[in-house]
Amino acid sequence: MYSVAQMVKKTFIVFEFEVRKLRHDPVEVFVRLIQPILWLVIFGSVFNKYRVIDTGNLSYISYLTPGVMAQSLLFTAIFYGIAITWDKDSGILAKLMVTPTSRGCIIIGKALSAGVRGLLQSAVIVLIALLLGVTFAFGIINIVGIIIVIVLASTCFACLSIVFASFLRKRERFMGVIQLITMPLFFASNALYPIELMPQPLQYVTLFNPLYYVVDSLRSLLITNDLSSVPSHIGVLLLVTIMFILAGIWGLKRLME
Image 1 (cartoon, helix red, strand yellow):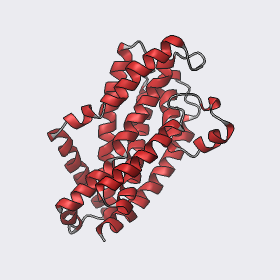
Image 2 (tube, one colour):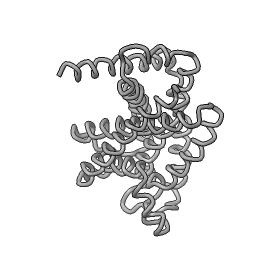
Image 3 (cartoon, one colour):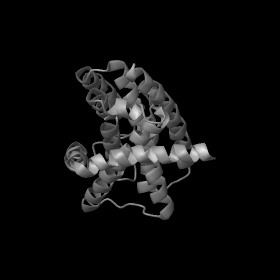
């Protein structure tokens, strides 16, 4: 019990340190919002007007909003490996590693801080969507579910980013490879269109894409209020997140070698 309490405390210390960085430089959060806002306001409005994509009873902009939120989470968290590379190059990570803080606490604390960024960005996207006429389901269960999905997704992609950073090591190489990963993850999901519109082989591939479960959960919690599939989707996200946390712990060890 004591060791668990100590782990939680040390994880929170790392988490608080990372959040403090955000407090000193909040501009980063809003700069990363520019692209999702453009998707929502321009792309969403045009496709909503002309009904280019069949989204059933939902307006296209309502359908798109959870996808844009998921895109924002992905594009913010997946570049988190750059931050840990900077920490390594500046010596901050080495100093942190010689403290009695385990690699697991460091990884989880840093990854959870990506969830704070995700929550802030998602709140702004929801406000803009409200101005565009999107109607949301704001029940207590829905809000709790949304927070869980956002934190899990941000943690998952941040840990995945750390794993890639441990292999690529150089920031320039990391940027190039991550660009190759994020776009297929985004387009091979249901963020922009229903998976039924994809070729059959791609539909099967989508089921192995964690972003699919993020988007589908957010769409159920925010828009349709059909919560039947949410528990299973959150279960999948939790499992994938735990796998990536373990991989991130291994990646951190490799990065420091």
